[in-house]
Length: 173
Image (cartoon, rainbow, N blue to C red):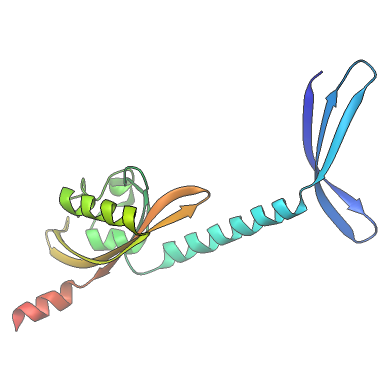
């Protein structure tokens, strides 16, 4: 009377291999029903999605621009790249699971503004921010944020363009 399921690969002909899902149920002592479904397209889509995720994470990690991935609901930092760590003067374990507000990079008002703008539009571009880094340097940046789905999880990708040198040069004039 139990239902069982198994995914496997079967050969069809000499050169074709397909992924299948086999589901079966017992209808009685001598009666069984078995369903075989071709899941090749689904498996290929999963492999392609994993490949895209790996490419994205490689580009994220190696990008020199400061970047963070945040949870969509609470904006807590999930991942940061080395550019962000250098930008704020902190170590990875000091920022992961914190928010940009807790790190004193954004004010509560700026976080609320970004949240409201992302509710209305999937991306925010060039929001001017300034803060004091943990190395006690005044930093200026343009922040852009976009809603993304990674591994079927909604997140916010934020990229910072450091304009500190430009702002300081303008002020020196």
